[in-house]
Image (cartoon, rainbow, N blue to C red; front, side):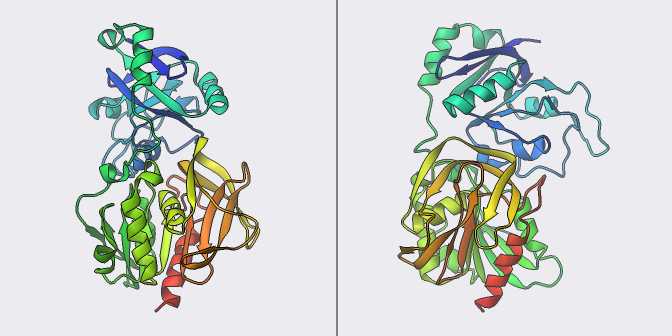
Length: 372
């Protein structure tokens, strides 16, 4: 197997062997703490322009299949694992993970230092990085490769939602009797999200990220949804403007992850970059109204800065922080008190789990019903 290097912008270098496609790739290096669901992670559009390091030691044991992808292909910029599975063993598998990475041109590295890498990122924070594999990619030498990493693009100020969004509107029909029409703005939507709504009788119209308020409202939706997605919410002013038009029209609103950040900015709040973000399926989030704690799936590097000591005023009436992260106090949800609009920072669709927060889709249906 050919040698490979993972080079971080602070000068830290990790040695390993090529995994997946060979060549070079640049992105922000982050880690994911999930022990399952690697195929859902790889195909989550929120990971665009990110090199994902898995903390679970063995990856690829169950291969890949045609049922679990969350989008049309692998979205990560690069992939870091400790020990790839030599054999894929699962009755649903249609191929191996290594083959899928090669076929889709995803450069990866298998290396013994994933624990050291994770500890380093927990201390220094997410940063720019690159994977170089194969003799040709490694030829310039470590100093030259480090300089290239330091010249690569930063995640701050990056507008990535439009690059992963659908280019044309499509419709996911309701399962069984149609109860509601939902306009879902695709900022990097996972395929399980409209499916969860369709299970509840929603006909979901999935629209491009650049859709205006007029285009969203032209569907005559019972409710509007803004999805998860990649990049810096401060660089997606078009989505903020569209959401303000939706809120002006009084339509029920539900946002997830990037949609929560866009909601916060629409309310006049600031967003900021987290030091190392939340990525995995084991984050404890508390509903401040009920005190209930959900173990939840996360994938975000930015968060909303909002007062947690009580209701605050916005252009759309009073609002409050509805959920907080029990690990670091990060804002995990917002809701308007005078209008039917709420959002959460985590992923209630949760493929491949956990499913503690699936009831949020029921809540969305309830506010659509109450607004008729």
